[in-house]
Length: 535
View 1 (spheres, rainbow, N blue to C red):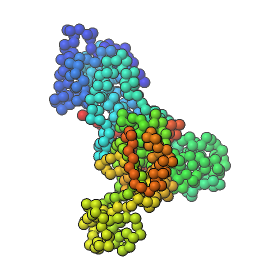
View 2 (view 1 turned 180 degrees about the vertical axis):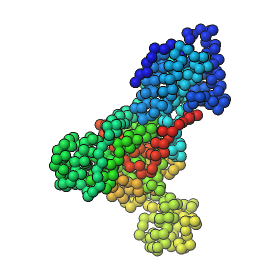
View 3 (view 1 turned 90 degrees about the horizontal axis):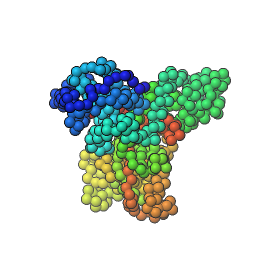
View 4 (view 1 turned 180 degrees about the horizontal axis):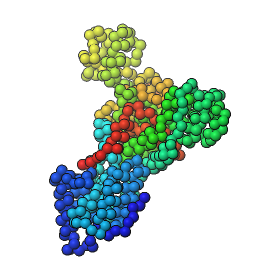
């Protein structure tokens, strides 16, 4: 809410005589935070940015009008809707100091208050633009966000402070993407559910399915009604019989939580139903934080993979124009998060088996089966690429420590990369590709790969990506049917984002939650609630 109080301007009316003490007080305050280890009682979170702000304006005050402070406090209160904490932006301290200084105070006290206000705004803008947490602290693979990020924050604040309306200027410069707005709306919805006491727990017991008569059915109906998966729970309070309509509501819940959509409440579905509403609130707060990491990076169109949700999307014009299931890395071989540019496709690719897979997984098979190469579509090559006859190799003498060869799987229906791979050059050797292991896409959780991303409908993706270059599905099918390896470059490379989020909101507002397969949420939650410093 707006903090409004009749108060005098922060500094006396402008004039040469009055300005000089104010500027000297600001200069002294800036030197304290710049050169004396942030020696400031209130705790300035962005000392370098705040100091640069006043040095660039020659220590002139930026907060003369009370209305500006009102606007700042309204912005601070609004951070709660973003999953941030208003207390991080000195909310209560600003209100307290404002009352104390109303119409009085020394030049030094007013200078300290001025820095408190600017630090609040600088931190708020920085967090709304880029996130409170540093993604590089969460993921050593992170490569998004330009090195000018802090400078851009400073310039944005300078522009906003020069504008007639501070809050309007900030909101115009921090335009929220539609998918970010949907996350905010979902956060508000789930906070209301949590504040009202959440949803009832489903007691342990046998599985519940259509036709089951069980006292727990009434709790199940109430639970699903609370989260919007069921329209009316009242009929089940008396009947305590699970019917087809309730089973359909279970399927809707399962679809939203990355579960097998069978309409049966077994152990996995029961665990998801009993996750507290407060935990869903936390997931949405974390999802908003992750969204802030990339909102400045997203152009259009782009390809995005949500690793935790096992989904791939193509976004154009702000809308999802295509999506599909994917298989991602195992928990011990996690798919990294980073951004890249998809440059080319390879139809009918061969597969040069990574050293770790060749020595840990395939070498034991080769050593156990003398006819392995005859029954598999692999060539053996030395490190220079020369083809080697496997029969000339003493396989018993080889191990993970002394394997001087490369295994290359020839193109074909059994090739691990399938009919096509999609390359966005990166240091992790990660790419998108087809797979002959189609059955894996029918499972709910799909963390089975060595780190690369397998796409359920790769030929549809190839057609979409190459459509601007004159390709249609018939031409893509013909390229695959030829059996020839062919590389096709995109006329315009497309941004690719490999992301990880355990919450996502559909365009219609439907909330999806996923299990934290890589156990990454807790660190971000802790960082969101911890003190911070912006360099």
